[in-house]
Length: 598
Image 1 (spheres, rainbow, N blue to C red):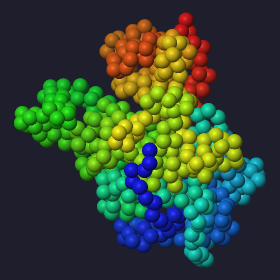
Image 2 (tube, rainbow, N blue to C red):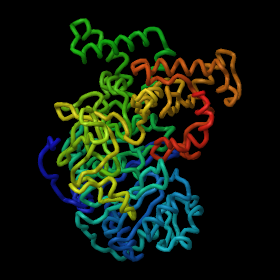
Image 3 (cartoon, rainbow, N blue to C red):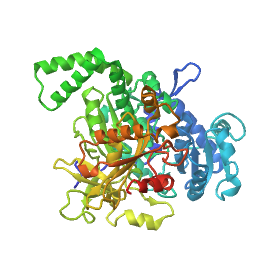
Image 4 (spheres, rainbow, N blue to C red):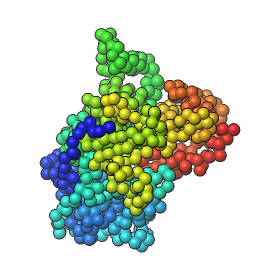
């Protein structure tokens, strides 16, 4: 389909100008907030203060000889220093290469070597000790600079050097490479996605043009998505800077709820897992409290559904008003009391959850994209939203549905994406680039979907992840997995069944919930022993059937394997963006999974 928002995305087409325009316009406004560990309160710095540090570091990079085309890598969580390093690097015409702190050392080494980086920033001395040998082992790498602390190889020293010999910023051409973002690597080494200044700036400007929540000065978000990933970097950094908004850094995953209360965001950018946990937590809390609170909660949910479906009357409106004043307002307070909307992407959001948050007055709007699209391509908005869809294409972008793999009569097919946000290609991988970039400029996304009469895109799965059962029926495991994880007893799930007569599920329980249930049943035991008990297996099987009640009978897993080892980035089962490495799960549990089909 052709673009709904026909027209070119306006310039400027480089991140340097976007940043400098914003810091001049909003110099006295707060930009970044960092939590003071001692007091627990947030300390804020302004656009002007950040701009001064960027100017100083740009001079420091020039002193080190960093210039156009050089690679500057960083291993760090989100911080003021991360942003300063990025914008200073852009201002020297360098390529910025971000990496996760929660990553394997061998992956850091691979990325730095593959991208040919000259300079490496690291968050602290602990990481510096892990990578100190890289300078002699990687030909291109000349220096490691520590963001934290002071000393000859510190960021502070480099900024001091730069303050003594300032240099003007370079304004790269739109086609110049702004950076490489390495994909998650679920099936092997990560691929370096080459993104130009035009790719990234056009995506910022197109998303801003959509005006989600009329974002502008005074808006605020809580930053907990890693900027090493394109979704967090564009939505939580570059777009917020362009809009004159601000962001506070979450202290840790475990403190997110507390941090939301302190930062009081107006907009949240998150992944489905965050909303799933909040949804599950709210329902568990209401079930535990029982009584009037639970009655009003359920009454309000029913009234909100009736209103949304056009079945509401005067009595329904009264019920909804009571529930909103007594119960729903407290849910909104958990988000800080100022939330206008949240944006969810990176994985499919369960429709039931999207509808729930809309009904309680904390709407979540689903978006779609990928690193190769810089990353945003479609977006739901308050004035144009369809539950279950991922929205319509943003300004200057459009999609086509290729049915060559699914058949001409199929409703869905592979999504081909077009627009100024389509990547330049994969670094050092011309054959891989040729597989996904078509001659007409379209990107073969690998996602399967269809478009309705109003231009809304609906995702049906990943081409590579889908498989057939013996009966010829296609299975899209991700949707099943995300639905099953709505159970409060289940933390992780993986579905298998390719070329088999039925599906099975590997389940990691939520042991905080399961341990409490087991103790009540007198089944207290070590976790390795607990998951083998028939009572536990029966409980999990029932939870799987309950969660999958709306799926076709052939899709519902018939058997489960319950395991005690969680899925984490540390054990290599999850990528840093929390995507499941199916190959790694099968390495560990392949024989046990196969036994379920016996």
